[in-house]
Amino acid sequence: MTDAENTAGHMPAHASENTAETRREFLNEVAAAALGIAGLGSVVVTYQYLAPNVLFEPPTSFQAGNPDLYPLSSVTFIEQQQVYIVRTVQGFYAVSAVCTHLGCITQWKPEVNQIACPCHGSKFTMEGTKIEGPAPAPLPHFAISLTPGGELLVDKLEIVPANQSLKV
Amino acid sequence: MATTSPVSGTLERLRGTRVWRSIFRRGPAQTNRTRSLAIFGSLFLHFLPVKVREKSLRIRASYYLGSVSFLLFVILAVTGVMLMFYYHPAVPDAYRDMKDLRFVVSNGVFLRNLHRLAAQLMVLAVFWHMFHVFYRGGYKPPHEFNWVVGVILLIVTLFLSYTGYLLPWDQLAFWAITVGTNILSAMPFIGKRVRFMSLGGNNVGANALLRFYVLHCVVLPLIAVLLIAVHFWRVQKDGGLTLRDENGRAEK
Image 1 (cartoon, rainbow over the protein chains, first blue to last red):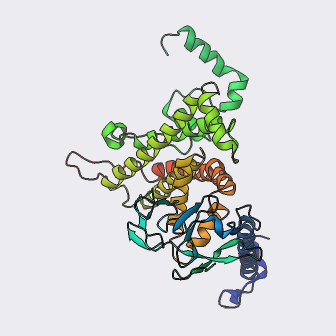
Image 2: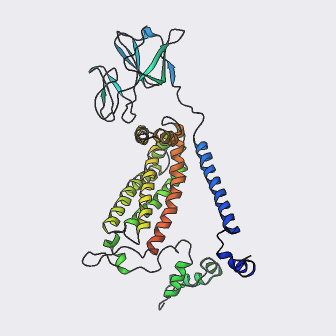
C-alpha cells in the first residue's frame, strides 16, 4: 500500500489533526529500538570477545631462591621478572625494575649506587626513591615472603610501602 | 582524427569490438558530452570531477600534496601486500621474517625499504597537505565536512604508521610500543583498560603483535580507503579547490 492510497482511501479526513501515533510511526519506533538494542548488544559482545580471558604471560608471583644466595648489601636484577631483590642489614625487599615514566626497564649501576633508566634518564636510589628525571613516581615495592621451603617469594600484584623489609 | 597512425588505427578497431563496448558501454570519448559520460559511467572515475578549472591544476594551487599522499598510499598498499606473503605475525617468526626479507628473499630489501620510506613520506605529505589546506582556508564553508574527513585521515595515517612500527619485532619496535601504550594508559579512568585491550594483555607480547598486524593490514587500510573515496568525492561536490586571486584573497 502506498502513501497516496493510504491518504486517499482509508484515512479519515480528521486524521492529520489527530495527535495519536500512526501505525507507521509506531512500527518505525519499534524497529529503531530493536536495531538500537541489537547494535548495543553487538558492541558489548564484540568488546567481550576482544578482551582475552586466558593470557600466556609470565606468572606475577615467583620464587627467587634461597635467601643465602644474596650477599649482604646487594642489588640483584631478576631479568625474567623485571624485579630487583635488595638485601640490606634490615632484610630483604623487592623493587620493580619497570620505570614509572613510560615502562622501560631500568638498570642497577653499582658504581654510583643508583637505578637508572636508559630511555629518558630517570634515576632512583636502591630503595626506588626518585632522584631525578621525568619519572612521576618512585619504583614500587612488591610483597616479599618466605615459602614453607624457605625460599623467597615475590608477589608482583601486591604493592607494599617502601619501609617494609623481610627479616630472615 | 586527421592522421591515422598504426597505433591509433589499432585502438580504433579495438574500441569497435564487442568486448570493449561491453566493458565501457559508451563509444569513444570525442565530444565534451561523451567525455563526461565516460567519467560518469565508470565506478572508478565517477567521484572525480568531469571538468576542472585550469587554475586549480597550477602547481601553486595545491602542490599536488593530496595526489602525492594518495600515490604514496597506493605504493604502501602494493608493497604491503607483497611483504605479507613472507611475514608471519607471530613470535619469534616476525623478527626472523623481517631479517629474511632483508637478506634472503629476492628484492625483499627493496620492497621493505620502499614500504618504510613511503610510510615516512606519507606522514610528511599528509601533514604538509593539511598545513597547506589550512593556510588556504580550506576548512571554511562549504569545505568543513571534508576538512573533518581529512583530519580523521591524518589520524588514520598516524595509526597506520604506529601499528606498522611494531611489526619488525625488534628492540626499537618493542620499546616504542611499550612507551606508546603506556602513554595510552595515562588516560583518566579508562587508560589501563584501553592499554589492555590494544595489547590484548598486560605487556607487549604475541597478542599485541597479532592485534597490531590485523589493525595495520586490514582494519585501518579499509577505513582509509573508504575515507579517501569520500574525501575525493567531496572535493568535487564542494566545488573544487580553494583558489586565490592575484591579491591572495580566496576566490568564490
